[in-house]
Structure formats: structure tokens, C-alpha cells
Image 1 (cartoon, rainbow, N blue to C red):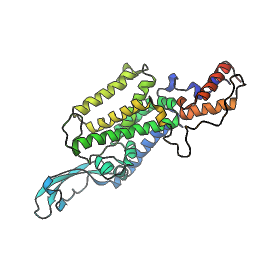
Image 2 (cartoon, rainbow, N blue to C red):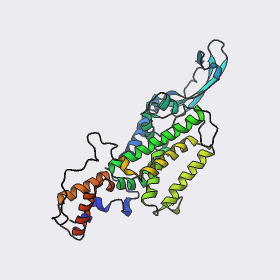
Image 3 (tube, rainbow, N blue to C red):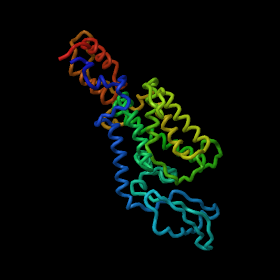
Image 4 (cartoon, rainbow, N blue to C red):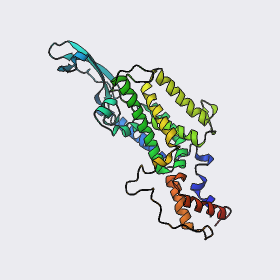
Amino acid sequence: MGIYDREYVRMGPHSRSGLGSVQFISFNSWLIIANVAVFVIGAFLSGMARPVMTGQSIHPDAVHRALVVDRFPSPLPPAGGGFVVGVFDRETGQPVGTRRFSMMTPLDEFGHFSTARGFFAMQVWRLITFQFLHSGIWHLVFNMLGLWIFGGMVEQYLGRKRYAAFYLTCGIAGGVSYLFLNLLGAGLGLQLPGVLVNDPWTPLVGASAGVFGVIMACAFIAPNAVVLVYFIPMKLKFMAYGYVALAAYNLLSGGNNAGGDAAHIGGAIAGFFFIRNAHLLRDFFDVLGDSRKPGRARQRSPRSPVNHAEVDRILSKVHEEGLRSLSEREKAVLREASSRGRGSSS
């Protein structure tokens, strides 16, 4: 069997079949499965939904007084619903503001991201967990469709470990972008295009930041690949940059879901940067060792017989970590093996 007869060489980053292909054992597949599973579990837990504060408007003079919240409506709205109640000064009984509540399942309550909980309360795990929560079925469907179409190509290019690091980093960057702009707007009170003046308790959920990073990566890997956008053929790079431009316009103009677009822009910027600097993702999951240390295998003479075990080891490394993980010696071994075995079979 020649080197080009191996399946994971034919399905490498230069393969035309990379777009839209998802192997069941790939990290991309597990991402889709995990997101769908979390959504289904959340649906089963809808009966356990309870009110969670997602916004408040209190008069500045009353912030430090003893406050009392008006009674909740009865019956309470179903999961996903919301309501607003009044806030009163305990001593005078005068209304001093309102509080907004949303009915959240336990998963949504402890997993969503907001400036108040993720930053002021230092609940940093929310930068990961919010990426697996969705506000509705169509929110989930469109995000998972994006992962199914584009994620396989990026995973084949980077390898499983680096793709996992890449995707999660883009999602985190989306949360940080949302946080930064919300701190400028709601925290410092800046009145600038693009800053978010929404309440710091406003929840952020969804995989869109990671998906935007993946799409930006595809625009680098296969910029001239043709995709259909509303049945119109378009080059992948134009589609990717067009999506980012629309998100940026909506964010700067303060349109509907500007907070979500802030996360989209953050994920896209991270995707643009890290697909060009994938070596920075190398040690993301290195807990037991440092992948930057040179291997113990000795340099082999180019004229020595091909070591098929060594070739298989290197190809497995490509499958797991991507072509960029190879050292110059390993690349030389593959070049020699391919030149000797391009036409061979067994």
C-alpha cells in the first residue's frame, strides 16, 4: 500500500471532499452531538424552569436602600418566557425601578454568559458553557448546519486537537468581545457606535461565535471554493467576509441582536488570527507533556529503506494534530516515502 492509498491522506486538508464531510469519530461530530444533546436535555428539564433575573432598572438614589420586589405573576410563564416586576423602597413604599426575569432551566441558569455573572461574579466557566446553549430550535439548527458544512474542512486542516482548541478559543473570544463592549457601554457609559448599552445581566448563549471562527478559517483554507448562499453560487471567501460585514454593520448601527453580533465579530477575529497562527494552539491540551520538545527518533539517512512503521506513526500524527504539527524531519520522511511509494500497492 502506497502512502496515497491511506484514507486519512486522501481526506487531508487539500481534499475536495473536506467541505461538509463529518466523520462520526471526529471532534466536529462530537460538537454537534453535544449541542443537540444539551438542547434535548434542556427540553426535558423545561418543567424545572424558574425565574432568573436578566435585567434591572433601579433609580441611582435607591441602589443602597432596602428594596422589595413585587410578587411574581401566577401562574409563571413557561420555560423561555419572561416578565417584569416592580421594585419598591421598603421604607417609603414608593416604586424605584423594575427587574426583568426569564424562565430558565437549570442548564440555562448555570450555563449562560452575562457581564454580571461571568465578570463581576467571576464565574469564568460560563465562557465555555454558553457555547453549548441555544435560545430555540432554529438557533440550534442554523449553528449546527454551519458546523456540519464547514467544520470538517477545518478539522482536517488542523487535526483533532488543534481544531478543538481553535473552536473553543473562537467561542471564548466571542464572549470576551461581548463583555468588553458591554463594559464600555453599560459600565463606563460611553456613547460610541458598536458599544453595548444593554443591561449587564442580559444573557448570551449560542455556538455562533465558534461557527463564525470556523467559517473564517475555511475562507483561508479554500478561499475559492464555491458555496450556495440562498441558491446563489459564491466564493467561500466572499461569503465569509460578507457575513462578517453584515454582523459589523448591525453591531455599529445598534440593530436587533447587536450583542450576538458582538460575539460573532469576536469569534471571526479569533478565527482569522489563529488559522494563520495555528502553532499557538499546539499546547492547548498538553497537560502531561510539552509537544515542542524534539522527538527521540534519530535522523534517518534519505537513502535508507523506508520505515513503514515510522511513516504510519507520522500519518497518525497528521490525522490527530494536522500537517502543521510535523517537524522538518517528519516532513522529509513523508516526502521520501511518497516519492518511493506513489505507485506501489500491496
